[in-house]
Length: 300
Image (cartoon, rainbow, N blue to C red):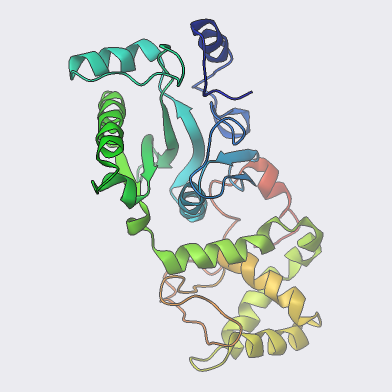
């Protein structure tokens, strides 16, 4: 069902009755789904490595930020399209600052406002906190000819959202495409395929041996595909299998690959970062039990 046009108060109350804003992990259900609203660019339904459920991303930009969240050691949960409830609070905030609360098109029914992504973050002391992200394209935040009214309305809605969250947590972030580490996002996206390919789970026991062999044959000028070929001989698998092992080893942080310096390509060397972390780790911190189960045979 589309939650956009001619919505009645009765419909909104029915949707709200189905919401559990305290739910987390695989139990969380986003308030908006891809089918509900027009998207900015491509919308996507993506299986979450940390949550063990399908995520509903309404733009490429939301997906890109989710990649960084999944790879982060400190992020332990990702909740997208998070409803700002109770709705009466956002209505009151709008009144306080003298702006009109947004309504569903074709009606006078106040919308249930949402935040694009709410992360649960574990700090140094192992305490957790919420980090809400409002994810926008920079072009939507710049007044130009023809979109001044739309720009001003966007800023008004962000003011409501910001005040809502600052009552609950110390930080609220406005994140744009200009802030993305583009090389890192591209690399994580490309390598993520190896992680979600369950047909390659039989390779998991080889991960530690592969990581060791990779370090031995690596050199600053050696092409990635040549490293694949040499490690394939060592492990007695195909170069294609090695490519999957490489993707998993990077996501599991078994290899200190510099994801920021260049876009990884078979024809070019890869850059290693100073290896200050432990070589072997017990999976990726924050992955759901569902995701970790797939790596149960991996001795890393």
